[in-house]
Length: 183
Image: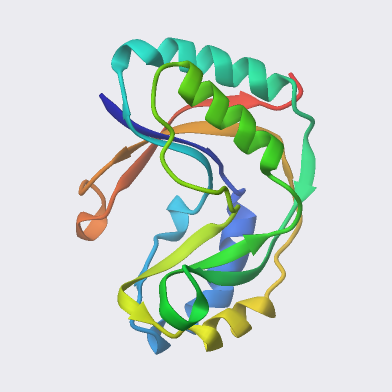
């Protein structure tokens, strides 16, 4: 069994731009900041993917991604889950719709034989987590002033999450395969 997710991974220059924006501000909050090199937009997550489903999942992701056109997006604004007044997660938002890619990813995961975790899809990049709910309204306002560089979404990635294997016992993410859009 593997813990997998399908994601859009922003290019390095996009990550660096957002990381620079946040770097001077990180000390002001009591957050567990996610590592910049692991920022991504989760399209579908499955906590338990049987090994026997891997090949079919890859085939379905390749076919589904190939039917999607590339498009331009950027990281812009932000928010909090479940809401800014009692947040557990601080995130950066995205410009444009990721709904079609999320449908492709979720359908591929479920058809290959794994259960897709999560509720309503909301495209975002998780920036930080809080140990207990807190008001992060000022952080959301700060993020609302952010607009990163545009980039073309040209592929989706299948990523394995290894719990507790990263720095400070955080998850380590390993890209297992990428699938080009419009192939």
